[in-house]
Every structure is written in structure tokens, then in C-alpha cells.
Length: 286
Image (cartoon, rainbow, N blue to C red; front, side):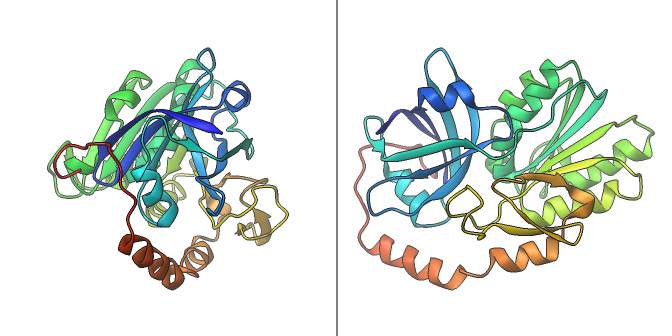
């Protein structure tokens, strides 16, 4: 059992929890993820480790409530336990001193971007973080990223905070003014990552994206996480989750992610009919 030690709401439908998982904390590297189950009858879902504390034997998970399991996790409180936490899984991020690294995060993608940004910063890179959300209230972990960035730029779609526009416009602005960029790392919604690649491709800037395909076992056995890279089938769980953004078939990935939208909505509505009580309290509107 993996006890929840701390839990907080950090945005509308977005939670952060500190979990006791000493073995995972010791072995984890930036870019890797875990697969968890909340209870005996629960489904297996992947979540990227947002942070860790090896001395305390803990990992930090950040998730958005979008399906039954993530909603269920939103009702859990400190003292509750996850029945399974398997990991770390996936291929770690390749981190070295590249020079100038631009780390682009959109929405909940800021959470998995954090350990990578931190690793790049600690490796001596000049790190420019570009964070984006639809509106100010949906921005997460900006202060965390600021501490591990040489420069930080923030964009909101509605202009409520930072630059009025998209992260891609901010990135294009850096390119247009001649900023020397050696690597771009982008994590966020698939349309955002595809848009980032469309910006970096003409400038021939190496671009790494972290994919979030449907996943079941996390070991490459089930094949559910198939993605097409350079015209070849790859498994997101073992070959990724990070890939060369120029080589990813984003359109196919989008179609595969939508395969179970109907059944997922049915299951979520059923779950909402019999909600699980929780003593956790959240700020109004969260």
C-alpha cells in the first residue's frame, strides 16, 4: 500500500499529492512515469512523476480530473492509500549541457515538464521556460518552474496573465529575434505539441515531445500505447514517452486517444451518481 501523505488542490480539478513510495523515489529519473491503481477493482492509469524526495521516500503526483480514476483520486485524502504504484517506467529524458533549452508546457503538461526542466537547469543549461494556459486560474506550478529556469515566460489565451496569446507565439518570438536555441522540450495537449513542432520545424530546432497514448500495462506487452514515429510503430511505454517531435504522427495519435471517449463518459456519469465522500476541503471554485 502507498499512503497519501499530503494532498492539495492547485487548480480547478487539478490535484497534487505526495505519496510514500521509497523504491520508486530512489530509482526515478526525469521523464519517467508510474502506473497506479486506487483500489482492488480500479483501472490502471499512467501518471508522470512530477517530483520526488529520496530522503523522505516520496514521489509527487499531479493530475487533472478527467475520468473515473482521476476523479476518484480527487476524493482521496491524506491517510488513504493507493493499492498499486508500479515504476519508474519509460525511458528517462536524455539530459546534458546542450546550451540553451526551451521547455514549453501547456496546461497539466507543466507538471511532467518540471523534473525535466529541473534536470536541464542543474546540468548547466540556459533554460527558458514557456508556460501556458487558457486563463490565469488554470496556470499551475509557475513558481516551481521559475526556480529552475534562467528565464520564464507565461502566456494565457485570454491575456489574463502574462503575454496575451499562445506558447507557440512566444516561442516564435524567440526564434524571430534570433535567440540561439539548442533544444526544445514540449509537453502538453496533443494539439499544442503539434503546434510547437510546426513552429520549430522550419527553424530546424531539435524538438522532443512527451506523448500520452492509451496505456494499460506499461511494459510493452499489451500494445495499447502504439504510436507511429518515422512511419514505424513504437510503444509509448517502453520506447517513450519521449520522441522526436518531427517524426511523430500526431493525427493518428489524436484519433487513438479518442477511441474510448464514449465508454469513458458513460463510466464517469455512473461514478458521479454514487460519489465517494471525502473530508478534504478545497478553496471555493477549486
